[in-house]
Length: 593
Image (cartoon, rainbow, N blue to C red; front, side, top):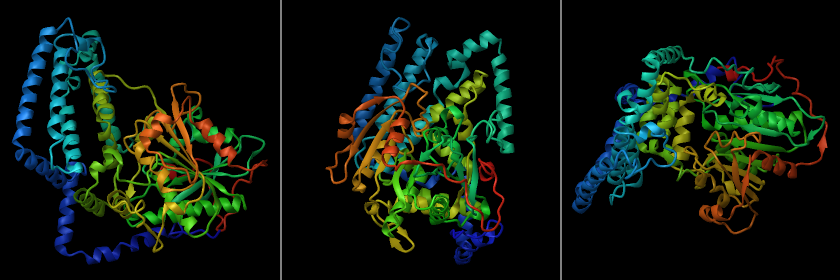
């Protein structure tokens, strides 16, 4: 099989590692020492650059100190907040939340206990303090947009630490549970903490109540191709006839692929096979330190390109519906632009799920992306060879710290309870690592310099541009996405001149995508922009796009069907391996790494 490979899996380590020798040799002793110092410091800071924080706070403080009128406004705002706090105290217990209420989505102070003295007063005082600091850290003239965002975000994280809901003596629910159980909740919480600590130390972070291949990632299929970076899974047909064009799914390699093949009731893969589609899935190998020099383009060649070539051998002559999720969607966009540039017409349609192709407004993740922070991360990865799972998971947890950190600590350790088993949370804990070179290129070329959107991104020495793509597109954004904000994903509408069906669905980056029709809570808005039609901005689109109750999955499969040819017999499962590899059934081996 004529596939691009780093090297055979058994020999790939030396080929991958060899690329980093020149870089090592070019470093002076002082440069190595500084990198080692930064790497050691990163272990203490969780990968956050102290220099980046200092620069941001210096920018804010210097401009605030040179704005005496603004400081006077803040002093007056502090006095007004104090007066509001006193007024709130005077109106309790008759009128809780008389001066300020938790913002929508903040569930820290939900419950009847939070309407009683002294808890309601503490909560209002905390919210007034948060409100004052938000005003103090934003809107200072002269502060750069990114520095302002860093200061506001970090101050919010610091204040969240001291929320009254986080402490047993100031949380009425914890006090009530303690009285009811005679303090047994603290014993149960200690046991929960000890189990979590053991799991963390052993590396077994995932919930043992789920088994990959049995409870999740259980759709029947077979690995039909393997190289040093991917296993390609072909799923077994579930209908007597199938649509002629197969679907290739390119997931992100930041997490495991089975976010799209969770439990049978919410598996997108199972839904697609049930709708008569032949589905192929890329399962990425979890890199280790010796894979440090795998490049971003290796993911394109050994991932998308190798998968397309393999599918072409299994179903020759049939074009492919390609889907990319998150970072996998960004990679698919680059691969599709490369194929279009080179005259390769094997893609029938392109679907992007919560995927960005322009990174100028890439959400709160950009707080961690500036020259100082990227350099700090590079030094940390240079020493380790990879970005470890803890750093990646920590960054995502910070974006939703109230939901993913503080509420968990309160629920598990103070209340002594455990959340019911969740396949989504199990997947979320099954984290992966990222190779040093690939992640550095990703951060610099895409996040920091925005090369893809601005026509500077090079593949094999030549630029690629999304405007070369002439394949119909179906693009999905989610309302509450902290990773790929929907207005960022919407920019594809002016980057390509093809028919683009854009869907904005309820939920967040994961829960909005995993939206099976059996769940009634979902809704979406949808509107198609035809090739050559005038562009409308996201705010205008939001006003005019019709709202539909239910899951977006049937809308997408209906769109895919309209892009497909007639039904036919299911294709064979795989092709004969050129090197007589014995390949396993789905979910394969790489998902267990």
